[in-house]
Length: 437
Image (cartoon, rainbow, N blue to C red):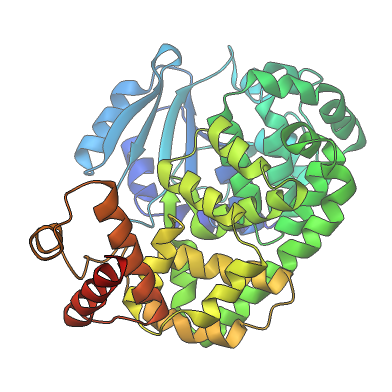
Protein backbone atom coordinates (compact mmCIF):
# COMPACT_ATOMS: atom_id res chain seq x y z
CA UNK A 1 0.00 0.00 0.00
CA UNK A 2 1.31 3.45 -0.90
CA UNK A 3 2.05 5.51 2.21
CA UNK A 4 2.58 9.25 1.96
CA UNK A 5 3.75 10.95 5.16
CA UNK A 6 2.39 14.26 3.85
CA UNK A 7 -1.09 12.72 3.74
CA UNK A 8 -1.09 12.56 7.50
CA UNK A 9 -1.00 16.29 8.16
CA UNK A 10 -3.33 17.07 5.25
CA UNK A 11 -5.83 14.37 6.19
CA UNK A 12 -6.01 15.47 9.82
CA UNK A 13 -5.87 19.24 9.44
CA UNK A 14 -8.72 19.25 6.92
CA UNK A 15 -11.05 17.86 9.58
CA UNK A 16 -13.49 20.38 11.06
CA UNK A 17 -12.29 21.66 14.46
CA UNK A 18 -9.00 19.75 14.30
CA UNK A 19 -6.81 22.85 14.24
CA UNK A 20 -8.89 24.28 17.08
CA UNK A 21 -8.23 21.07 18.97
CA UNK A 22 -4.49 21.56 18.45
CA UNK A 23 -4.74 25.08 19.85
CA UNK A 24 -6.94 23.90 22.70
CA UNK A 25 -4.40 21.24 23.73
CA UNK A 26 -1.42 23.59 23.41
CA UNK A 27 1.21 22.82 26.02
CA UNK A 28 -0.22 19.39 26.89
CA UNK A 29 1.22 16.01 26.04
CA UNK A 30 -1.38 14.40 23.80
CA UNK A 31 -1.24 11.88 20.95
CA UNK A 32 -3.48 10.97 18.05
CA UNK A 33 -3.52 7.18 17.81
CA UNK A 34 -5.04 4.28 15.94
CA UNK A 35 -7.47 4.55 13.05
CA UNK A 36 -7.11 8.30 12.50
CA UNK A 37 -3.35 7.97 11.94
CA UNK A 38 -3.72 4.81 9.86
CA UNK A 39 -6.44 6.18 7.58
CA UNK A 40 -4.82 9.59 7.11
CA UNK A 41 -1.57 7.92 6.08
CA UNK A 42 -3.24 5.97 3.27
CA UNK A 43 -5.54 8.80 2.19
CA UNK A 44 -8.77 7.32 3.55
CA UNK A 45 -11.28 9.79 5.05
CA UNK A 46 -11.02 10.00 8.84
CA UNK A 47 -14.26 9.68 10.84
CA UNK A 48 -13.01 9.14 14.40
CA UNK A 49 -10.11 10.78 16.21
CA UNK A 50 -8.71 8.88 19.20
CA UNK A 51 -6.66 11.02 21.57
CA UNK A 52 -4.62 9.60 24.46
CA UNK A 53 -3.09 11.46 27.39
CA UNK A 54 -0.71 10.51 30.22
CA UNK A 55 -3.04 12.40 32.61
CA UNK A 56 -6.82 12.38 33.03
CA UNK A 57 -8.25 14.30 30.00
CA UNK A 58 -11.87 14.46 31.22
CA UNK A 59 -11.91 18.14 32.19
CA UNK A 60 -10.25 19.06 28.89
CA UNK A 61 -12.78 17.03 26.90
CA UNK A 62 -15.71 18.67 28.70
CA UNK A 63 -14.25 22.12 28.12
CA UNK A 64 -13.57 21.42 24.43
CA UNK A 65 -17.18 20.35 23.96
CA UNK A 66 -18.55 23.38 25.81
CA UNK A 67 -16.45 25.96 23.99
CA UNK A 68 -17.19 24.59 20.51
CA UNK A 69 -20.82 23.57 20.93
CA UNK A 70 -20.31 19.83 21.16
CA UNK A 71 -21.86 17.13 23.32
CA UNK A 72 -19.70 15.32 25.88
CA UNK A 73 -20.48 11.92 27.43
CA UNK A 74 -18.74 9.01 29.11
CA UNK A 75 -17.57 5.95 27.20
CA UNK A 76 -16.01 4.29 30.23
CA UNK A 77 -16.00 6.33 33.41
CA UNK A 78 -13.92 3.80 35.29
CA UNK A 79 -11.11 4.14 32.72
CA UNK A 80 -11.59 7.90 32.20
CA UNK A 81 -12.63 7.51 28.58
CA UNK A 82 -15.10 10.01 27.13
CA UNK A 83 -16.40 11.20 23.77
CA UNK A 84 -17.23 14.56 22.18
CA UNK A 85 -19.56 14.78 19.17
CA UNK A 86 -20.71 17.77 17.14
CA UNK A 87 -24.17 17.15 15.76
CA UNK A 88 -24.27 20.52 14.02
CA UNK A 89 -21.54 19.46 11.56
CA UNK A 90 -22.01 16.11 9.79
CA UNK A 91 -18.44 16.25 8.45
CA UNK A 92 -16.93 16.64 11.93
CA UNK A 93 -15.33 13.48 13.34
CA UNK A 94 -16.04 11.96 16.73
CA UNK A 95 -13.33 12.86 19.25
CA UNK A 96 -12.47 10.27 21.91
CA UNK A 97 -10.38 11.27 24.94
CA UNK A 98 -8.63 8.58 27.00
CA UNK A 99 -5.83 7.92 29.45
CA UNK A 100 -2.81 5.87 28.48
CA UNK A 101 -3.62 2.16 28.88
CA UNK A 102 -0.22 1.60 30.49
CA UNK A 103 2.54 3.51 32.26
CA UNK A 104 4.07 4.83 29.03
CA UNK A 105 3.11 5.58 25.44
CA UNK A 106 5.07 2.63 24.03
CA UNK A 107 3.47 0.20 26.45
CA UNK A 108 0.05 1.64 25.62
CA UNK A 109 0.63 1.02 21.91
CA UNK A 110 1.94 -2.50 22.54
CA UNK A 111 -1.32 -3.29 24.33
CA UNK A 112 -3.40 -2.62 21.18
CA UNK A 113 -4.92 -5.04 18.70
CA UNK A 114 -3.07 -4.77 15.38
CA UNK A 115 0.22 -3.14 14.48
CA UNK A 116 -1.44 -0.80 11.97
CA UNK A 117 -3.50 0.60 14.87
CA UNK A 118 -0.53 0.94 17.20
CA UNK A 119 0.94 4.08 15.59
CA UNK A 120 0.78 7.42 17.40
CA UNK A 121 1.41 11.03 16.45
CA UNK A 122 2.12 13.78 18.96
CA UNK A 123 -0.43 16.56 18.55
CA UNK A 124 1.39 19.74 17.60
CA UNK A 125 1.07 22.75 15.31
CA UNK A 126 3.49 21.23 12.76
CA UNK A 127 2.30 17.70 12.01
CA UNK A 128 4.58 17.38 8.98
CA UNK A 129 7.76 17.08 11.04
CA UNK A 130 6.41 15.41 14.17
CA UNK A 131 7.82 11.86 14.28
CA UNK A 132 5.54 8.85 14.38
CA UNK A 133 5.72 6.61 17.43
CA UNK A 134 5.62 3.06 16.07
CA UNK A 135 7.01 0.44 18.49
CA UNK A 136 5.24 -2.49 16.74
CA UNK A 137 6.40 -1.60 13.20
CA UNK A 138 2.86 -0.92 12.05
CA UNK A 139 3.95 1.51 9.34
CA UNK A 140 5.97 -1.24 7.65
CA UNK A 141 3.01 -3.63 7.87
CA UNK A 142 0.73 -1.00 6.37
CA UNK A 143 3.15 -0.52 3.48
CA UNK A 144 3.24 -4.29 2.97
CA UNK A 145 -0.58 -4.68 3.11
CA UNK A 146 -0.29 -6.88 6.18
CA UNK A 147 -2.64 -7.25 9.13
CA UNK A 148 -0.64 -8.52 12.11
CA UNK A 149 -1.61 -8.76 15.77
CA UNK A 150 0.54 -6.79 18.17
CA UNK A 151 0.95 -9.60 20.70
CA UNK A 152 0.16 -13.28 21.18
CA UNK A 153 -2.63 -12.49 23.65
CA UNK A 154 -4.34 -9.83 21.49
CA UNK A 155 -7.48 -11.93 20.96
CA UNK A 156 -7.46 -13.37 24.45
CA UNK A 157 -7.66 -9.83 25.84
CA UNK A 158 -10.58 -8.94 23.56
CA UNK A 159 -12.04 -11.60 21.23
CA UNK A 160 -13.96 -8.96 19.26
CA UNK A 161 -10.62 -8.06 17.71
CA UNK A 162 -10.98 -11.11 15.46
CA UNK A 163 -14.09 -9.64 13.82
CA UNK A 164 -12.47 -6.20 13.73
CA UNK A 165 -9.47 -7.73 12.03
CA UNK A 166 -11.64 -9.11 9.24
CA UNK A 167 -13.22 -5.69 8.85
CA UNK A 168 -9.83 -3.92 8.68
CA UNK A 169 -8.48 -6.45 6.16
CA UNK A 170 -11.61 -6.01 4.04
CA UNK A 171 -11.68 -2.21 4.10
CA UNK A 172 -7.94 -1.75 3.49
CA UNK A 173 -7.37 -4.80 1.25
CA UNK A 174 -4.87 -6.37 3.66
CA UNK A 175 -3.51 -9.89 3.86
CA UNK A 176 -3.91 -11.47 7.31
CA UNK A 177 -0.50 -12.65 8.54
CA UNK A 178 -0.35 -16.44 8.90
CA UNK A 179 0.30 -16.45 12.64
CA UNK A 180 -2.50 -13.94 13.22
CA UNK A 181 -4.88 -16.00 11.09
CA UNK A 182 -3.95 -19.14 13.01
CA UNK A 183 -4.71 -17.44 16.32
CA UNK A 184 -8.09 -16.32 14.98
CA UNK A 185 -8.95 -19.87 13.96
CA UNK A 186 -7.77 -21.28 17.30
CA UNK A 187 -9.55 -18.74 19.50
CA UNK A 188 -12.74 -18.06 17.52
CA UNK A 189 -14.94 -19.82 20.08
CA UNK A 190 -13.97 -17.13 22.59
CA UNK A 191 -16.40 -14.84 20.79
CA UNK A 192 -19.03 -16.14 23.21
CA UNK A 193 -17.57 -13.61 25.67
CA UNK A 194 -18.49 -10.65 23.44
CA UNK A 195 -21.82 -8.83 23.61
CA UNK A 196 -23.87 -9.40 20.43
CA UNK A 197 -24.28 -5.65 19.89
CA UNK A 198 -20.51 -5.30 19.47
CA UNK A 199 -20.27 -8.23 17.07
CA UNK A 200 -23.13 -7.08 14.87
CA UNK A 201 -21.59 -3.61 14.43
CA UNK A 202 -18.35 -5.10 13.10
CA UNK A 203 -20.17 -7.52 10.77
CA UNK A 204 -22.32 -4.69 9.43
CA UNK A 205 -19.26 -2.50 8.84
CA UNK A 206 -17.67 -5.35 6.89
CA UNK A 207 -20.76 -5.77 4.72
CA UNK A 208 -20.87 -2.02 4.14
CA UNK A 209 -17.36 -2.08 2.62
CA UNK A 210 -17.00 -1.78 -1.12
CA UNK A 211 -15.05 -5.06 -1.06
CA UNK A 212 -17.62 -6.86 1.12
CA UNK A 213 -17.41 -9.96 -1.09
CA UNK A 214 -13.79 -10.38 -0.02
CA UNK A 215 -14.90 -9.82 3.57
CA UNK A 216 -17.15 -12.89 3.29
CA UNK A 217 -14.18 -14.96 2.17
CA UNK A 218 -12.09 -13.65 5.08
CA UNK A 219 -14.89 -14.47 7.53
CA UNK A 220 -14.72 -18.02 6.18
CA UNK A 221 -10.92 -18.23 6.20
CA UNK A 222 -10.70 -17.01 9.80
CA UNK A 223 -13.58 -19.32 10.86
CA UNK A 224 -15.33 -16.31 12.35
CA UNK A 225 -18.12 -16.84 9.82
CA UNK A 226 -18.49 -20.48 10.87
CA UNK A 227 -18.79 -19.51 14.51
CA UNK A 228 -21.37 -16.80 13.85
CA UNK A 229 -23.40 -18.37 11.05
CA UNK A 230 -22.85 -22.13 11.22
CA UNK A 231 -20.31 -24.63 9.91
CA UNK A 232 -21.69 -24.54 6.38
CA UNK A 233 -20.50 -20.95 6.00
CA UNK A 234 -16.94 -21.71 4.88
CA UNK A 235 -18.05 -24.15 2.20
CA UNK A 236 -20.57 -21.68 0.76
CA UNK A 237 -18.72 -18.39 1.23
CA UNK A 238 -17.77 -18.27 -2.45
CA UNK A 239 -21.41 -18.71 -3.45
CA UNK A 240 -22.42 -15.96 -1.00
CA UNK A 241 -19.77 -13.63 -2.42
CA UNK A 242 -21.18 -14.18 -5.91
CA UNK A 243 -24.72 -13.53 -4.66
CA UNK A 244 -23.58 -10.31 -3.01
CA UNK A 245 -22.12 -9.15 -6.32
CA UNK A 246 -25.40 -9.96 -8.13
CA UNK A 247 -27.48 -8.03 -5.60
CA UNK A 248 -25.24 -4.98 -5.59
CA UNK A 249 -25.12 -5.01 -9.37
CA UNK A 250 -28.92 -5.11 -9.43
CA UNK A 251 -29.18 -2.10 -7.12
CA UNK A 252 -26.49 -0.28 -9.10
CA UNK A 253 -28.48 -0.63 -12.35
CA UNK A 254 -31.66 0.40 -10.56
CA UNK A 255 -29.91 3.45 -9.06
CA UNK A 256 -28.58 4.42 -12.48
CA UNK A 257 -32.15 4.61 -13.82
CA UNK A 258 -33.69 5.92 -10.60
CA UNK A 259 -31.04 7.87 -8.60
CA UNK A 260 -33.32 8.17 -5.55
CA UNK A 261 -32.61 4.49 -4.88
CA UNK A 262 -29.15 5.49 -3.61
CA UNK A 263 -30.85 7.49 -0.86
CA UNK A 264 -33.07 4.53 -0.02
CA UNK A 265 -30.09 2.22 0.36
CA UNK A 266 -28.23 4.70 2.56
CA UNK A 267 -31.12 5.32 4.97
CA UNK A 268 -30.56 4.10 8.53
CA UNK A 269 -32.84 1.40 9.88
CA UNK A 270 -31.18 1.77 13.26
CA UNK A 271 -27.90 3.24 14.46
CA UNK A 272 -25.02 1.90 12.39
CA UNK A 273 -27.27 -0.15 10.11
CA UNK A 274 -28.27 1.07 6.66
CA UNK A 275 -31.07 -0.38 4.56
CA UNK A 276 -28.49 -1.77 2.14
CA UNK A 277 -26.53 -3.57 4.85
CA UNK A 278 -29.62 -5.01 6.54
CA UNK A 279 -30.96 -6.35 3.26
CA UNK A 280 -27.60 -7.86 2.28
CA UNK A 281 -27.19 -9.45 5.71
CA UNK A 282 -30.66 -11.00 5.69
CA UNK A 283 -30.66 -12.10 2.04
CA UNK A 284 -27.24 -13.76 2.20
CA UNK A 285 -27.84 -15.56 5.49
CA UNK A 286 -31.22 -16.80 4.28
CA UNK A 287 -29.34 -18.64 1.52
CA UNK A 288 -27.62 -20.68 4.24
CA UNK A 289 -30.77 -21.28 6.28
CA UNK A 290 -34.12 -19.57 5.85
CA UNK A 291 -34.57 -19.35 9.63
CA UNK A 292 -31.07 -18.02 10.38
CA UNK A 293 -31.71 -14.27 9.87
CA UNK A 294 -34.74 -14.40 12.17
CA UNK A 295 -32.84 -16.26 14.90
CA UNK A 296 -29.91 -13.87 14.74
CA UNK A 297 -32.22 -10.86 14.68
CA UNK A 298 -33.39 -11.99 18.11
CA UNK A 299 -29.95 -12.98 19.41
CA UNK A 300 -28.32 -9.80 18.13
CA UNK A 301 -31.08 -7.65 19.63
CA UNK A 302 -32.09 -5.88 16.43
CA UNK A 303 -34.72 -3.16 16.52
CA UNK A 304 -38.39 -3.92 15.93
CA UNK A 305 -38.22 -2.42 12.44
CA UNK A 306 -35.17 -4.50 11.50
CA UNK A 307 -36.79 -7.69 12.84
CA UNK A 308 -39.94 -6.99 10.82
CA UNK A 309 -37.84 -6.57 7.69
CA UNK A 310 -36.00 -9.84 8.29
CA UNK A 311 -39.30 -11.68 8.86
CA UNK A 312 -40.77 -10.26 5.65
CA UNK A 313 -37.73 -11.27 3.62
CA UNK A 314 -38.04 -14.83 4.82
CA UNK A 315 -41.53 -14.97 3.29
CA UNK A 316 -40.49 -13.97 -0.24
CA UNK A 317 -40.91 -16.83 -2.69
CA UNK A 318 -41.86 -17.26 -6.35
CA UNK A 319 -45.50 -16.53 -5.53
CA UNK A 320 -44.56 -13.27 -3.78
CA UNK A 321 -42.46 -12.13 -6.73
CA UNK A 322 -45.36 -12.97 -9.04
CA UNK A 323 -47.77 -10.85 -6.99
CA UNK A 324 -45.95 -7.68 -8.05
CA UNK A 325 -47.27 -8.03 -11.58
CA UNK A 326 -50.85 -7.95 -10.35
CA UNK A 327 -50.62 -4.98 -7.96
CA UNK A 328 -52.92 -2.15 -9.03
CA UNK A 329 -50.83 0.86 -10.18
CA UNK A 330 -50.85 3.58 -7.56
CA UNK A 331 -49.24 4.33 -4.21
CA UNK A 332 -52.05 3.11 -1.94
CA UNK A 333 -52.15 -0.35 -3.51
CA UNK A 334 -48.40 -0.87 -3.12
CA UNK A 335 -48.43 0.55 0.41
CA UNK A 336 -51.15 -1.87 1.54
CA UNK A 337 -49.36 -4.77 -0.14
CA UNK A 338 -46.04 -3.97 1.59
CA UNK A 339 -47.64 -3.36 4.98
CA UNK A 340 -49.44 -6.68 4.62
CA UNK A 341 -45.97 -8.20 4.90
CA UNK A 342 -45.19 -5.79 7.79
CA UNK A 343 -42.36 -4.03 5.96
CA UNK A 344 -41.74 -0.44 4.90
CA UNK A 345 -42.48 -0.03 1.13
CA UNK A 346 -39.01 1.17 0.07
CA UNK A 347 -37.32 -1.74 1.81
CA UNK A 348 -39.85 -4.11 0.23
CA UNK A 349 -39.16 -2.92 -3.31
CA UNK A 350 -35.38 -3.11 -2.80
CA UNK A 351 -35.73 -6.63 -1.43
CA UNK A 352 -37.92 -7.74 -4.34
CA UNK A 353 -35.40 -6.34 -6.81
CA UNK A 354 -32.51 -8.17 -5.11
CA UNK A 355 -34.20 -11.53 -4.68
CA UNK A 356 -35.65 -11.33 -8.18
CA UNK A 357 -32.13 -10.77 -9.55
CA UNK A 358 -30.81 -13.79 -7.62
CA UNK A 359 -33.60 -15.96 -9.06
CA UNK A 360 -33.20 -14.67 -12.60
CA UNK A 361 -36.55 -12.90 -12.50
CA UNK A 362 -37.28 -10.45 -15.32
CA UNK A 363 -39.26 -7.87 -13.32
CA UNK A 364 -36.47 -5.27 -13.35
CA UNK A 365 -38.32 -2.85 -15.64
CA UNK A 366 -41.51 -3.20 -13.60
CA UNK A 367 -39.60 -2.56 -10.36
CA UNK A 368 -37.93 0.47 -11.93
CA UNK A 369 -41.34 1.89 -12.82
CA UNK A 370 -42.54 1.42 -9.25
CA UNK A 371 -39.66 3.47 -7.73
CA UNK A 372 -41.16 6.99 -8.19
CA UNK A 373 -44.52 5.72 -6.91
CA UNK A 374 -43.04 4.09 -3.82
CA UNK A 375 -40.85 7.13 -3.14
CA UNK A 376 -44.00 9.11 -2.31
CA UNK A 377 -44.92 6.69 0.49
CA UNK A 378 -44.06 7.01 4.14
CA UNK A 379 -43.29 4.36 6.73
CA UNK A 380 -46.88 4.17 7.96
CA UNK A 381 -49.80 2.51 6.14
CA UNK A 382 -52.42 4.71 4.43
CA UNK A 383 -55.65 5.71 6.12
CA UNK A 384 -58.57 3.34 5.54
CA UNK A 385 -61.03 4.36 2.81
CA UNK A 386 -63.86 3.76 5.29
CA UNK A 387 -63.75 4.12 9.06
CA UNK A 388 -65.13 2.05 11.89
CA UNK A 389 -68.02 4.46 12.48
CA UNK A 390 -69.31 3.93 8.91
CA UNK A 391 -68.92 0.16 9.20
CA UNK A 392 -70.93 0.16 12.42
CA UNK A 393 -73.63 2.56 11.22
CA UNK A 394 -74.11 1.32 7.64
CA UNK A 395 -73.22 -2.37 7.88
CA UNK A 396 -73.98 -3.06 11.53
CA UNK A 397 -70.50 -4.42 12.22
CA UNK A 398 -69.41 -4.21 15.86
CA UNK A 399 -65.74 -3.49 16.64
CA UNK A 400 -63.76 -6.70 16.78
CA UNK A 401 -62.63 -9.60 14.60
CA UNK A 402 -65.41 -9.27 12.01
CA UNK A 403 -64.69 -5.56 11.42
CA UNK A 404 -60.96 -6.34 11.12
CA UNK A 405 -61.72 -9.09 8.59
CA UNK A 406 -63.81 -6.71 6.47
CA UNK A 407 -61.06 -4.07 6.52
CA UNK A 408 -58.51 -6.66 5.37
CA UNK A 409 -60.90 -7.60 2.57
CA UNK A 410 -61.09 -3.95 1.56
CA UNK A 411 -57.30 -3.56 1.53
CA UNK A 412 -56.97 -6.60 -0.73
CA UNK A 413 -59.57 -5.07 -3.01
CA UNK A 414 -57.44 -1.90 -3.21
CA UNK A 415 -54.33 -3.95 -3.93
CA UNK A 416 -56.02 -5.72 -6.82
CA UNK A 417 -57.65 -2.53 -8.17
CA UNK A 418 -61.27 -3.40 -7.40
CA UNK A 419 -61.68 -0.15 -5.43
CA UNK A 420 -59.84 3.16 -5.59
CA UNK A 421 -61.95 5.66 -3.65
CA UNK A 422 -64.18 5.98 -0.60
CA UNK A 423 -67.27 5.78 -2.79
CA UNK A 424 -66.19 2.61 -4.59
CA UNK A 425 -65.06 1.11 -1.28
CA UNK A 426 -68.48 1.63 0.27
CA UNK A 427 -70.24 0.17 -2.77
CA UNK A 428 -67.92 -2.83 -2.71
CA UNK A 429 -68.52 -3.52 0.98
CA UNK A 430 -72.28 -3.07 0.76
CA UNK A 431 -72.37 -5.50 -2.17
CA UNK A 432 -70.07 -7.94 -0.34
CA UNK A 433 -72.12 -7.90 2.87
CA UNK A 434 -75.39 -8.22 0.97
CA UNK A 435 -74.09 -11.32 -0.81
CA UNK A 436 -73.00 -12.84 2.50
CA UNK A 437 -76.45 -12.22 3.98
